[in-house]
Length: 91
Image (cartoon, rainbow, N blue to C red; front, side):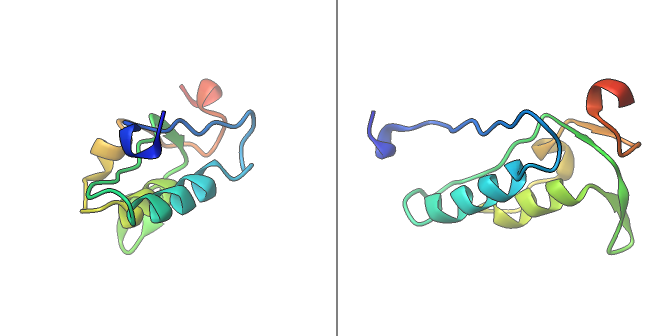
């Protein structure tokens, strides 16, 4: 499969704080040089804090900033859990 035919990439890690969002952001940055539309998606985040006066998750904010155009946080991450603990415990 060539890069031009790719429809998506899946980045995974087996623990918290291992750099999944950082790798995703860097990948998105590179892909924007090749493709017109690049967006990040993170199905679940845990830990909401106040960012610029809004309750947000920092990983979602990073993916918003790296996307080709702005998407609402619930489009990037439909499940945003309040407590900053492992998602399976927060749920």
